[in-house]
Length: 554
Image (cartoon, rainbow, N blue to C red; front, side, top):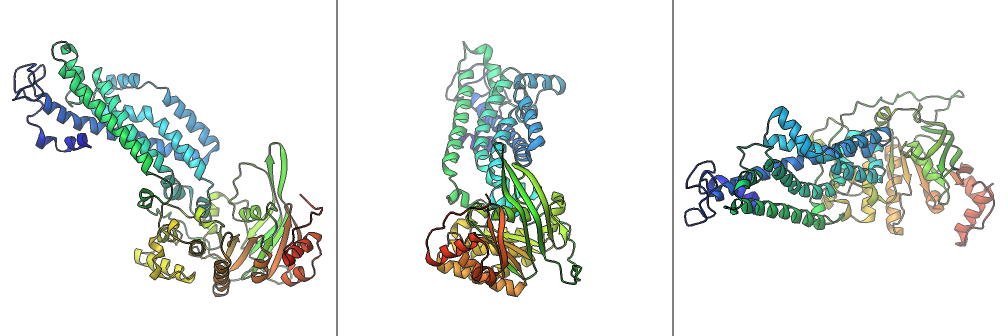
């Protein structure tokens, strides 16, 4: 930081103009010249002070160029994967093997030496390291729940990358950038030492270049700039180490101060839902959601796993339908296929139809799907702490789901209104807090408010009360039921809790091994179950005993 201060204040603290001849050549240190003079009689101390400006300039700009290129390329490669990832990583490997010295010499021969040339050389030859770090970070984040929530909200890849993924992937890159400043200073010194660079810039590397012939008679001309370079690089390495220690995960003081701005994607208005309902041949309104013979198979090391196999589900407007089953029964896979949030990497087969509001969902392009979701469907996930963006305040996250065109005041009012709907009044200051500052029940209500920001007709609730105590569970359920009545909201409830189904749902589907083993009106299924599996589930619920193993689909 001392060297950075010297660079800023060089005009005021340097005793002489570094380009003026003020004494005899190679004059040793004394009262007039604290560090002596160079071969032309210029003050060495003034040259060191002004040289810090050139070195810091190149170091910061070089690291900034390298980090920016690396972040953009690494983020795109990590997020999209597939062929895009392969092509970009091959390009990165090509640039990684380019020797900076050869590139610098070629560019200097074409355009002449300058500090900006050095910056370009640093940016072109060092970005692959940053790109690989960013790619790894993005790949670990792209399927996280809060990213899926952004996809459900109808945002496109650009918005998700810049507001949800990159801000959470940045911390390791900040450390790398601090290291990059020191590395850039070393590269500049090396290139200037061999004569590539601006001879009039007066950088420390240029001082070393000039001092070469005088090493036997005036060693201070080489030692002083060399020592300055070592101390500067060491200082930035220590800063990087300090940043690495300070940037602890979610909840640290440093992370809590980060504010990621909401970059609203200017979505085209979603096609308005026709006021005249779609009618079936016999005159009844078509279901809001209709899943017909859905099949989702995964390839697990050469074995076909039928996660969802021939499942059909319907949900009418304003209806609450439960999908119940043990862990691994396929109910969450069903929910994620309805919202198209299931990562396609390991899927080996998809079949059947998913129609929402009369339109086929599975065949939609990503851009059309993003526009289609808004105003129709949203999702409340389990474990809200994993789904909320840890670097953004609650108010900013909810505002990100609001339609474009609202003023700042209108957005704030709408955020307060949505929080009040889920019984989080503005007096609590929830909008100004980060997710880690809230209780489990408050976070789950925030998730519901986020879902309502999209004004959905269908809300998919995937285990909405997991890990909440009985009192908070009841409060969350009451909130959902009240919103269902007030908003005429259809709810598809994914759960393994039969008590939850009994208290909320009109109809129920029982799943096991990827198949629906029983479905019907709630009272009919609970009082007169036809499936052995359903009877065993109900028996386990009544007396608290374990489930007897029975045969059935797997």
